[in-house]
Length: 148
Image (cartoon, rainbow, N blue to C red):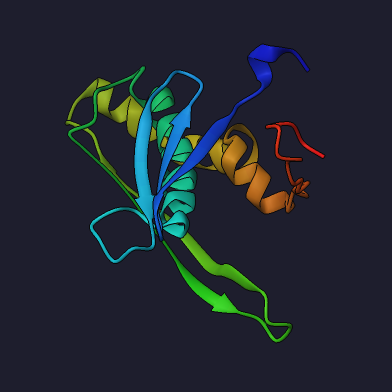
């Protein structure tokens, strides 16, 4: 892996239940479970899935025509299984995309279904990561900022 393949996000606590995420470009976003108007971590996961697939579909279809309407909806149930493990189940991703009448709109409509399936089956790294159940290594820093 080269450095250009690595993606990183750092999380800093603002207060109980409220956090700030910073990406490698210095862009910041506040999130948490503090009963405010911020996204929760689960909502961010759903956003990542819908955003990744939505972007794929947009790039493929808009080569043919600018959409007249572009809406992606995602939902899932936050559940606890019989082993007591929390997870999101029943994730459903719905695309509601319309294109103008005419040859260009017809061309975009003609690739829409294929684009959605390509994104889900191959292109979207977020969906692929979730679907595969990629293991996550967990480390505790030794207090010096380095992992132990």
